[in-house]
Image (cartoon, rainbow, N blue to C red; front, side, top):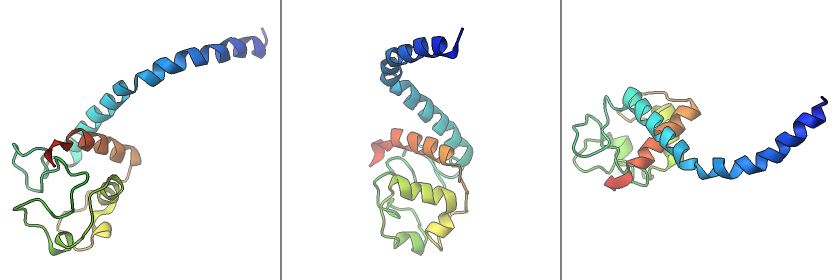
Length: 134
């Protein structure tokens, strides 16, 4: 059997399976959120909660995407973060996760150093899922 006889049926079958795979993106999103929650628990939860019902050493991260930096009421931010003047966008959060001292010099948060873009994206997927607190 030649390679052509193997490739032709495979190429014909691919378009039939593509719509099913594309329709199942919610399952992939669910997996990303679940993985992000576990990564958040391992890397961030020791200082940050994601909802107002849990105590937190650092500011709550529920609704963080789109929130002005240094704006959680009654949290004692460093002067560097109080005057940073930016909004927490996803690129800003990625930069913060990778090198918070480089992103906002003078912040009091200890550097976490999450530089793996996949881990960052999964944590962001989780944070997107807890946006209710704006």
